[in-house]
Length: 195
Length: 195
DNA sequence: CCTACCGATCGGTAGG
DNA sequence: CCTACCGATCGGTAGG
Image (cartoon, rainbow over all chains, first blue to last red; front, side, top):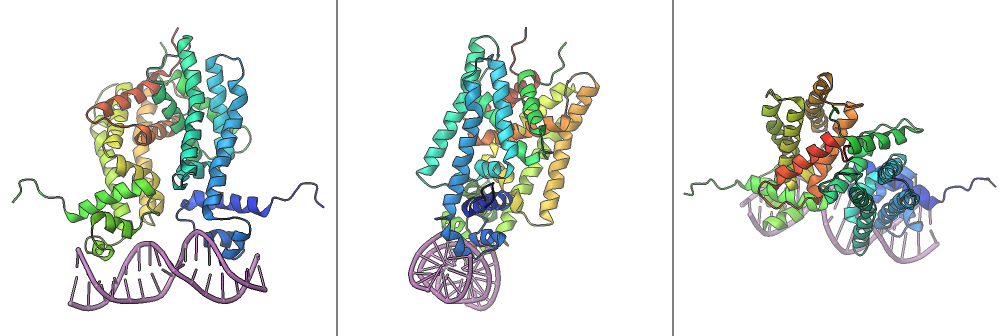
């Protein structure tokens, strides 16, 4: 008996799906491709999962949990709003870069969820974005930040954070933290040389 | 005879495809959906186009032309690098927001191009990004900008610009310019209150 | 632009 | 986890 529990077949299928969905997209990836990559017959997948969409659902909502868990302790800390925002950016970006495959799926293919999961997903995402906009609002109120349009700022920040996986070739280790800090520096300071 | 030339059937098909591809993605949109939306039989599409991918190709490379044309005159102007960068951001963002459907396809579905178009597309995109990184390099050399990692900065900027279409509900007119300027302000100045 | 149709492939089920 | 198979749908062609 191994000390470390073997990954369940269900989880192995999910991880392979993350890889294939990332490469070709959810719609263009067939259950036959997935079964082939697992080395089993297509029908055998259905001993472990109920449907193709069940896999997509697990990926999307699994990532949502990962993101919430990453920023939750930071939100409840009592640092300055600038420090909080920076930490949240680093935390979010770490999740993105540590789960590159799943993030791509989360980010591209949530559209293919059917109701009611689709509405749940949108609600969840909105709540998550509000965690960031709350910190920005407070930072403005307390004189730390100068932001014209907070919604705009939040959306732009998420665009930047969520696309890192597409171009950042992660050398493992703490490089991920660097990406988050670079992003935070850019957002906080801009690129204009200070006089 | 109308004074304004009627859009060719081919262009009508392409515009309908932009809409449907945006909503469901390229792979999940069938030629039958497209034909249905046009009010004709699926087989009739092939009187005007050669294949599904031909449509994708036209959309992706058509948008590439639009982007290049938008920034080309700015690159050859002799403003400061900061002014150039701002104008290029506004110009690019205007294209994005004026062709929302096509931009979504351009941005999500280029992956489904097959070779050699796929390689051409990547080369073209790289050349386009280099126009922005050139301005940043010069700005750093001339003391206008403080940028640690220019590649990182370019990628982040593109992430932000190319996602605007997903969340910005364009009220028509010049609102598009505002989006570009907001983006430029954020990138140039950051959000930290200056002392 | 239509009718009629092709072979291939899709997600999924029955039964073991 | 497999064999055997379902009905539906796919992109596309022939011929008019």
